[in-house]
View 1: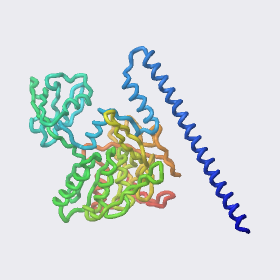
View 2: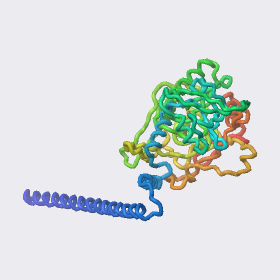
View 3: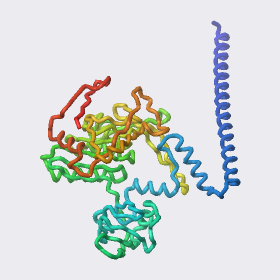
View 4: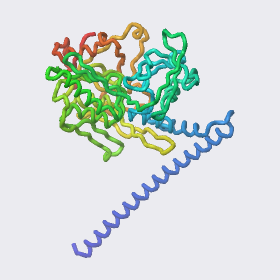
Length: 446
């Protein structure tokens, strides 16, 4: 082929490539323009409806409430865990995740419209002022609280550190009410409680806030110091733990692991895939671990249980967990609050999706219900039963959640008793082959 012919065909090929690129860009531009046009049309429709409501509704509506409700409706239509947080709700959420606030230091409930003290927290203003379990609070700074919701009453009891609050108390055994002046102080929500069960350390994690990992490490150190070399193992109780901060779930898992993946998160785009890895330094020095879960164990709890299960670092005991396998990102909106938006799914180290499936325990141990609860025949609810939940793309049938009853009397706690027996080497009653996965499925008779 002559050089002139070769140059001609190269020129034609480049011209065709340039033309194809131009056409593709035009198509993309047209598609984007069409999409934007549709968005603007829908926003115009929203504006028309809003104006009609504002002008013609039977009563004058609250404009701010209308907009907030519309935004929340948009987000909640995506999935059950995306939502709008106004400034007040955003502040409350930050208090929960920080795990500390200015307050009195009492756990309260509502009884017949009156705030009842469940328990004063040790070494807090309330306990030092002599507040007792069972006390009824009728007034705050002389103002009656009858008619307030529990949340509204709690808001009034919280406040800046070093500010006083006078509680009017009704106490059983006393004929008259009396006032107690309490000065607010920094209160920490303790997400970790621990105790020693003979030669076994028991740790209960109730939520994953900013304090969880540090308090867990302190609990393990205290257990190791108290039991010493005779320790048989550890029970990590995650039952009815609804989750919390992702980074705390990772750090809690890391406390028990030496290496390997903890959790994988995958967003809408492939570049958003992230992997969290463990670091050397197992505080239990390879000790045996049993993790307790039930239908109330969700999200961050499932990350911990899944990571320890995949690494064969712990034996999971209880019933199937809730099945919330998605990650929510909090996007602040300045003084307007924030949005909680589902931005990723998470997977266990072995690439299992927990979404609408949950964590299956290695040993299924069902906690018997008391007669009054059994009569109600309440069906357990998990992620798979929530309307609008993210679907699991796996081939297995969606199934999540289980009953979440935990008795207050430790002597009646079947799951706890099983864990103690397991760590003491008591032989399990039954071991059978599981289904297609070929793994072992272990069950125990009630």
